[in-house]
Image (cartoon, rainbow, N blue to C red; front, side, top):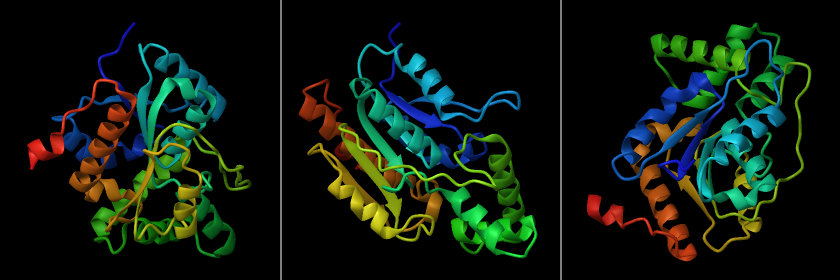
Length: 251
């Protein structure tokens, strides 16, 4: 079976799908994007191995290597997949994923839980401040609900009694690594260190001027332009059906 889009957006955080929507809406007129979602049920193990197996089963339906995209934990899954199956991956775009790829918003949340005498709701409010900045009370309540859902339902390496560290993950595929100047989850050194791990000449690091941890929600056009430019350079380098210069066409 051959699928119509060669770009696959990964999502293992169902509660956060709304944060992807503005960027997907920007990209869709230019490039068709397929989506792959994973959410373990309460009866299933919270396992990256299961997720990798299911993702590989899906990707094998494509007739050629594909571009993968993922934010946070979804990006970590894409990184693990590209390490294991590089022949299946044309490029990988990561949002808010550092060289220490296991570090995510939950790492900080559980750190606060261990260090703080405050109840869960106050710790979540601190996370709202870290992830989104100053937020109106009504919106903060909605965001708190989304964070709680993500803790309870999504794929994760971490839980209250154990936070996992991973060895640095090296991949050979072209990488676009994106973050923001004010993402408090990632240490700036963990972003800059990516440049020493790039093994493909088309790999690049791009820093958004704002937007914190979910910068792609607040800056969809800027992020989208960078992604289109990256995919075009990868396609040209591989001499595979180059993506048209849509940035100039849309200017």
